[in-house]
Amino acid sequence: LFTQFRKQFRDRGEDVQQRLRAVRTSDSLDRILTALRNPDADLAPFASAAAVQARREELDFLELVASDGRIVSSARGPGRDSAESWVTAPVDWKREPAFLREEQLTGEPVLALVAVETVDSGDKPFYLVGGVRLDDQFLNSLPVSADLRTSLVRATAADDDAHWPVLRELADAVHRERNSITRRIRLEDESSWTYQGVPLDGRDGRMLGVLLVGSSPSF
Image (cartoon, rainbow, N blue to C red; front, side, top):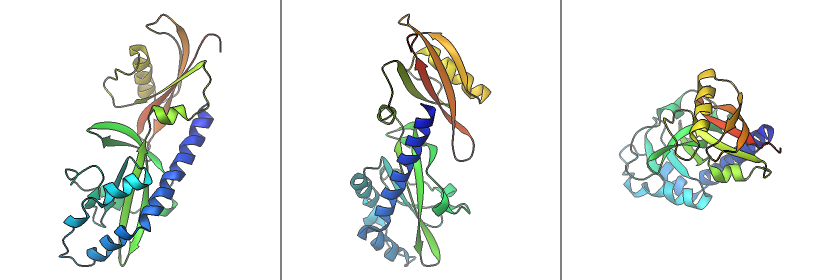
């Protein structure tokens, strides 16, 4: 199952990259790049451009970022006016696959599959940062039998009501040990399951989440 998770993660990441390439060739992005050639250009008319493209390409979030890290347009709304300085680091994003990152979506932190697309714009690059959240829909796409249960838990979450407390304890143990851990767990419904927790790292090597896979006694 972990091999399948990695494959699905890679395939979904390639899909996100393809969607960003579609944004790169859009007419609205051409208009933004043309406007940016004028340092005094009014970029306010492009405030909703990211939201329009995100809906079109079915991305959970999308940001159009200037060469200095300034966000020109964000699908997360006008309140998202901070800079994305990390994307301006000396990285060849054209060679980088999609990666796991913690993002703020709908006012809460979530695990997301993120990709960066670089657009050549004269002597200065322009960046497209977009992705999709990793949630139950992603897990449901895995070929899991009825004898298996899967969960994704953020490593930095202090609590998560969506999971049994004993699973939160297992996720915390994986976070502390930074290694896979297998435990026999009795859930609150009195059923007994064998759970394995696997750490999930971001691009910088920092642990961001834990994949929990449980098998029933009959498995």
